[in-house]
Image 1 (cartoon, rainbow, N blue to C red):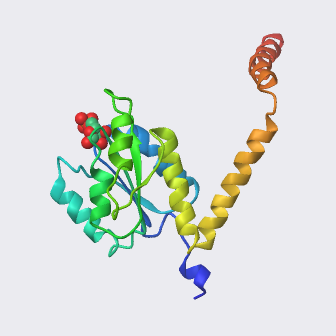
Image 2 (cartoon, rainbow, N blue to C red; image 1 turned 60 degrees about the vertical axis):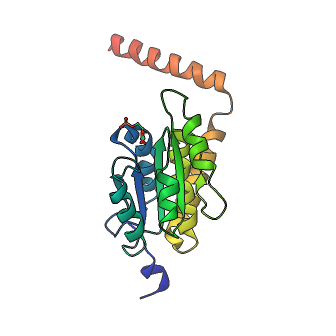
Length: 193
Ligand code: RP5
């Protein structure tokens, strides 16, 4: 088997990325990480693991992840967000933290809890909310791309398509007009027929 075949990654394979979150209420944010990984063909698993409500499960998940073949962990949490840091303390695989937007402080509490780790236990901290969840998945793919050529190519295609979409709509005023004019013309044609 070639290195590339050995390193192939598709959705039927064992998960390479573990997406964990402190609560089911975090799913609204963290589903964007799962969707982005799916789009890139990166096998992943998703679990609710709470640092405060299920600390034993957190220890078990983090300490067994490497042995189970997980190569990157994405951990999302809000408020006193200890999940990413505590996870990082129990494994040497990279942990990417997503600060979930909290009601009280709009996620600033989550951001600082995740980013302000003491020297020695790093957590790669992303932006608050949806952007952070998407970027955590893209960063996980970039990390995995060092080992899995398919993932690196999927990431390259994602970037190219993103660039093409932006270049295809250089004038936002025209784009806005076309969303008004095109449906109106369609309705007119339908009425005539
Ligand atoms: C954190 O507390 C979770 O990550 C979540 O963002 C926040 C609120 O959790 P719920 O009260 O909605 O379960 O542990």
